Image (cartoon, rainbow, N blue to C red):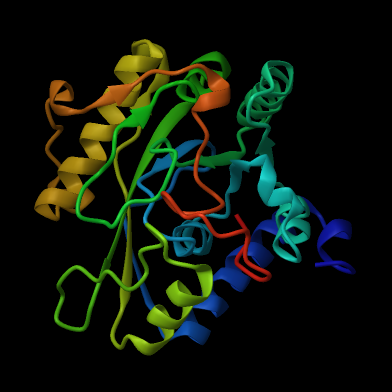
Length: 265
């Protein structure tokens, strides 16, 4: 990261990020299964279960993620995040949020992949939490498509695995150990049909992305069997940008400080 990543062309950096992510899955003994074809650039939006989600997407489609600003101060992980094209959102600062939003729009206009978790926190994988709509405005302003990604984890029997879930008061190391000691975990990353950001406002766009991901997770559809869900079935909360922060730090309700070592957001 220190002596190679900053000095090689961007295509090489993306290839390195994908390779490192695949190597992490190999080291953890977790299989990765992809369905669908990721687009070359756009706003990637996914449900959020674990810190492993980021690597699942990066292994398939190297992406710059948006993270909470406090991750920047984490030991080791903060440095890794800052040096892998992460965009940081500062909570409670309107001016900083506006600057970050402009950086996000500029990257999208350059046809980069930028990833966000619109739930704003992690869930246990049993469903999809409401989506915040604010960051969808960036896709509208940049004139790019929105790419929903459905993430789920299964065990050796093909049932939903809770081992990777980074929720509640679970610490990073507890989550890490649960993944390592569980056998037969498969991470599924389904890249769903993209959405036209220019066809609706950010609230409706968030509804459609939420509905697409929730529908895919509920019925286990692959893109080849996709049926567009009714957008009215999705749930949305449309907040201002500083409050619509994708998860990248602690899980829901976790009172513990940032871990001494983690995985990059």
